[in-house]
Structure formats: C-alpha cells, structure tokens
Image 1 (cartoon, rainbow, N blue to C red):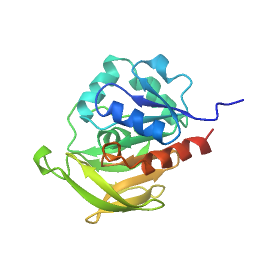
Image 2 (cartoon, rainbow, N blue to C red):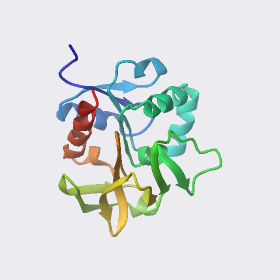
Image 3 (tube, rainbow, N blue to C red):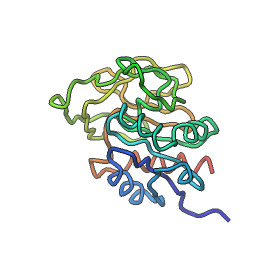
Length: 196
C-alpha cells in the first residue's frame, strides 16, 4: 500500500532548499533533500530550487546527479522548478553560458536574468490560473520567451510569461517558497499525487 503522503525531494546542491522542504511539508508531503543519485530512489516528485542556474548545473555534474535526474524526468518523474529551476527544466535558454547544463523537459525558451540584476528584484501580485492572485517574489528572475503548443501558460507579469505547466512539469520564474503562501506547493503535491 503506497504511503498516503507523497515523498517529494528537493535538489539540495544550492539555493532555497530549507524553504522548499518546509513549504512541501506544510502542503501535505513528506520532503527529503536530494544530493546524490541514490537519494532519487523512492521519491514521487522533485523540486529544483532557485539559486544560480550555472552553479546548480555544475554541481549536478560533480555530484553525478545530472544524468540520473534527467532520465527520471524523461521517465515521468514530476518536477517543479522555481527561478533557476525553471532555467534548468527548459529545453532552450537565451543568455546562457557556453557550458550551461540543462535537465530539459519543458518545451520552452527561457531568458536568464530577464527582469534584471539582483538590485532589480521586486514583488508583484500575479494572477495564476487555478490559484488566483499570488504575491510573487522575483530575484534575478528569468521569463519564458516562447512556449510550445503543449505548454500551458498559467501566469504572466507585465505580459511576460512567468509560470507554466506541461504534463507533470511545473515552473515559475519567481520564488513561492519565500512567501509563506503554500498554494503553488499544494498544486505540485496534487500533480504528484495524480501521477502515483
């Protein structure tokens, strides 16, 4: 008999790991940190947190998690990426570095640091499909330049795409884990439960 609560991992190489773990627990999931390939066994979904996408990519390679995680996502493991996580889940990235590492899976083109530098960070209410108004925190945030036909745009900020969903994948260019509002994590938990 499966565990009533899904077990969702948070990639714990860099970024807002503790905040995502706490938000997942508040949203009704068991949450664990994922640092090594063996940590992927037994999880029902994974969050790729915000942070710095090139640093997370390099650490994915160093800790030998890149290929196992890429294969798991290709195999249907639900994944949610916030900010840098959106960049890592994108199939195409504008303004990436020559050695940029991607997990892929989302049929989107994402622009890194699209809203500006760290000093340009801001908060704004964003209307999210199925969730409603959400006070979003943007920190050196990307945006989606182009979304494929199978991608559902679920949120925009000043006409820019900032939240998308495609099958078992979810991504936001902002940081819901910093707000105390767990509705996006609850949405992801619901997505994970639907795929079990």
